[in-house]
Image 1 (cartoon, one colour):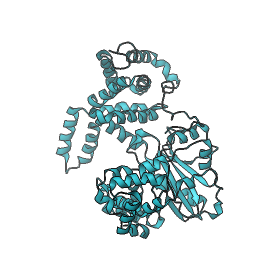
Image 2 (spheres, helix red, strand yellow):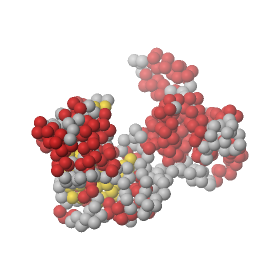
Image 3 (tube, helix red, strand yellow):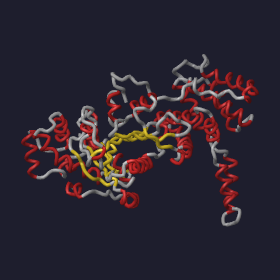
Image 4 (cartoon, one colour):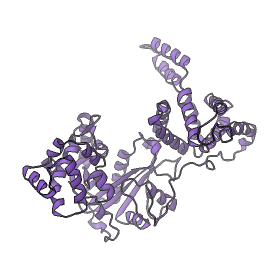
Length: 488
């Protein structure tokens, strides 16, 4: 997300070579020779030994040295302290590489450091012989140990370093970037994902409220990481952290100044139906004594490298508990959510899908107003026109048509047997109810381009969350309000 010109903000923090170091400790003096050796090996990666510096990746000689060093890591040569030092130097060198050379290292890790096939085959044979006997449990443990990849051993060595956890999160971001065109990285990606899932278990995370008095570096990251509604300025941020607002984030103890995911909440009376009104900086601050509703209007994941590690469902439940504890008068917990994949779906839809949303009189009114019959292409053009004329007769004419189509989209359009809309999948799987659709609730350029201006209230009715979750998980059932059912 680009920061506002009036509020220049640095890019989100990541591990840099100067940060990726081993702190001075007494035992480090015993490792000076090892340090010099590792540095000499990795100096090849940033010297003139490449075939074409900065573009063609590593030379064969440099790659052989990398392979040799990674093998030493895999067998943990020299003991724990030596492995820790070697990992620090490896990380420091990797971060200094050009993109082509980084890819060479990743491909090497992805293709050459799997499990030992001989040991794996022996463990499988032992396990098969032990089936149904008292030896089976121990054989299972030995089999799990045998199939552990050598790259897993290498990656784990980074976690003991001061910035090692963040380094691995960023490393997986690099892997995900290359993965679509480099399938050889699939095993490395999976190993990283499984490691990060165990290290970022929700039990290790702390929920913290972020306020205007939080460190400036943390506030800068909120601006940079906000993925739903761009923070336009410092005044905009201050408004989002004011007395009638709340912001909560999950943090990991090894990444204390890096929010992993954060949610922004507005305290209101009743459900909000327009995000521009909700975020209006000039609006009078809401009297908290009148608040009966908590509106979750933005949830942002911040670390691309943690894709596949689920925090959101736990975040919402923890935030609801915190809000109930501090403000017991709150009775409703709802979202004001975009429909980010709807417009792209609508542009691919056929006319039949569009016509399901219109009544006979609306078809005639549409043709009279827009001088062409209602169809997918015509509706897309009409939405753009109506967005520029908010409150006009044209906008009101489109309202019932678009809301019916969105209702059908959210309840019937499927991807891998789950709702096509990723936001709907998230909230419905967490036990929310599809409560209300709001026309022209986000008239920003992004809101029109992605959601046709429509926003959704997903309502978390606390006594029904578990039941809704079970029905969605078991049957794929989308629980809807009577208002949405009328649209259908």
